[in-house]
Image 1 (cartoon, rainbow, N blue to C red):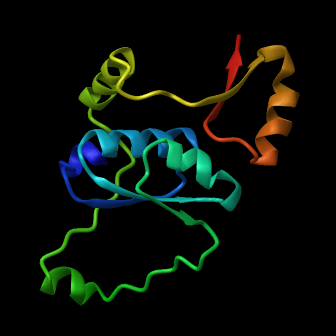
Image 2 (image 1 turned 120 degrees about the vertical axis):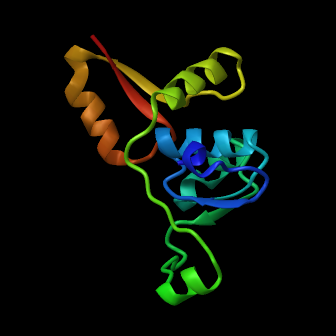
Length: 135
């Protein structure tokens, strides 16, 4: 999404910032010079702030936004969603990791034989980053 919208030095709100994708989005947005407002659970705000978020908003603080669609077009605003990325996005991501410009967050690794333990840990939601299964 950051690539698609051409994010630069502007303000962006990123949800789910304690997960793997969200934590990467915080780092990538900061790399582009954006001011990052990150949304995360209360127990994870410190870890998310350490990623570079300018402000961390507690997930249960009532963040429901009502939007009159007329506001979008009358103020010439854009609302975009993204579920698919261009191949260059993955290439850039790998390059940034290799250059130590962003750091993937791995909360734990589990051998494939311990998939049940990994799933149990996943259900606790008490970690920041990703859990990795090793074949």
